[in-house]
Length: 211
Image 1 (cartoon, helix red, strand yellow):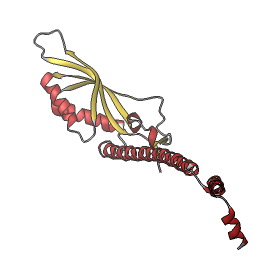
Image 2: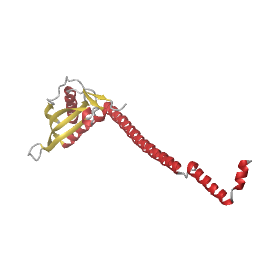
Image 3: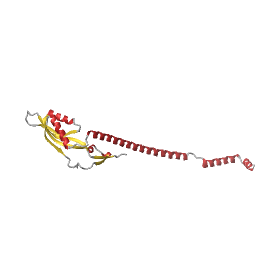
Image 4: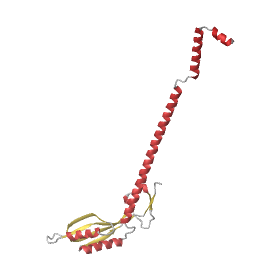
């Protein structure tokens, strides 16, 4: 009753003044104008941006790894193709026989036939180890090269080349020149000099570079 009586004794101005103080106290004590919420939003946005950048980097890394795996698979396919066309071993005697047989069938005369060996290579050396990422075409094959001199008509020479092309082994002619066999106008023969090359698989051990 005393509290009610004291309240009724207050003038209207005092009541309004007290209400203002109470409202101000509530405002400063409890009211959040949104500052903390804005800070939380900013923090979350920064975190989202960080995660998006991290995701982008992860995607780039995964794409690069996928491309590397694709390159490795393609290289393995190329190796399989090479293995199907290039023998593991091709001896000098085999190449000599191939060249002689092609020449005999074509009717050309071999006037010179000598093997060109690479003195820097040891035939008994163990296989060279190479990472699959570092493999180059020249690492995969070795040459069996002969220097050849041939005399015959141009048509017979073409037959000789065709005969070499029919071989199961890959045969290549390189560094050659063709000229008349003699100054005799009645001599229709030509003289060929050049390299005839066979190929065999190189002795290498390919190490996988991608798991």
